[in-house]
Length: 221
Image (cartoon, rainbow, N blue to C red):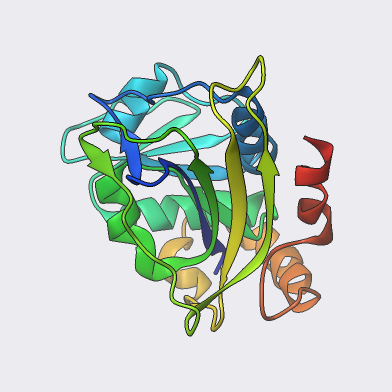
């Protein structure tokens, strides 16, 4: 199955990710990084995160996990539970030959999907103390995770604060397994794409879904 990756931006040192359902900063460079990585992929988020963004993210399958009904559109799909969210993300990824999908918040969503996450792109924002109501307090133990790379960015006209982006990889990737019949028996597009998807995954590095092209993204920012 496609692998799960998360993108998180939090304050340093307080680990705040939100204040009253808004970001406590503007980081144009980090937003560019977020867009570059998630374009063309499925993204899973909670209802509050979706409302804070204000619109569906273009050129992405927006999957909204919520107990409350969200009206489906061409680019927005409601998931009443985590299993449905994974199902929609898997189908979209296989049809579009994507090796991964993204979990983008908020706090509860990160916690729900953490066990599936193989790669974390963590942005530490050097903002100093911030009072917020949403946090990402998870630490990454060196026995389970390793830092593949990191890059620091200075405060600038488009960035309120200096920040650091780290790529953190699970040492033993979590692999999900399923058969076509479990989720695609009535979806011919998934069946047609499956063989090509399997061939693509067979050619991939078994230890990670991070492609060489992704490694170049930070150098372009």
